[in-house]
Length: 316
Image (cartoon, rainbow, N blue to C red):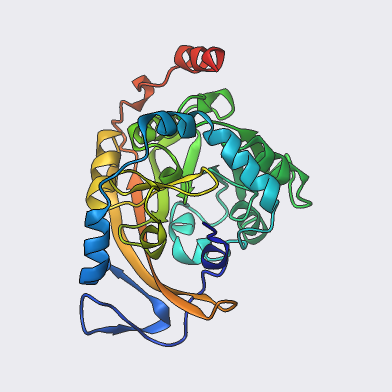
């Protein structure tokens, strides 16, 4: 299954968009809402009929080969798959709101940086920012370091499995003002998402924020999966072995709450995406959220420790 045409061309439309849930129209092809996009009866019937899951053996194999599959993804696509995300500062005005004064230098962690489509536009637009950038794929990290805009005095890129490797091996404890978690958590097994968030929480300052954007429940990509792709509730595997979870706002809120974060904003973003090559205009559902690490957080004693990180590496 190829998602190139859909995910590469995520653009706002100039015409209005009608939502299935209400007879309302929204300009520019985007709206925020407290409910996910509604499905047709045919779509609901198809989703409810998908009861057969990928076998336990194959699921274990997919989990074991997760890093290899993402590395192969970047080997095939190099830096050409995703567009640079210049919308990051537009969508997340919190990057500016985090400053107490205009010239304050922000420290940002891009968890799951890919090849730098988010961080390099940020570094160009904001001269008072230092970015830690990590990714599951060693190949992706190498692409970041080879980018002409990469400068060690403004960016530190490193390979990291958020569910195993301790971030504090590369990032000082409680030193980060803002964490961006953009289309990353969905690639992690749901059973390991909390551990990843606790890991992130250790390097985030008290009062620091996580800016989250990822696939929402009933997104078009979810409806495209064929029989034999389902790993669990709202969790699927693509043909290349990479995985995707589709979040409900209730699941996400509970997940972050259990990892000791407070929810500030947690909304669905409904929009239309154009695939000009195939002449398609499809409905997309994303979840865009903001969470804060409270001042009294106990995240320093989370499940992931230096010892467990080292033991995991030895087991591999």
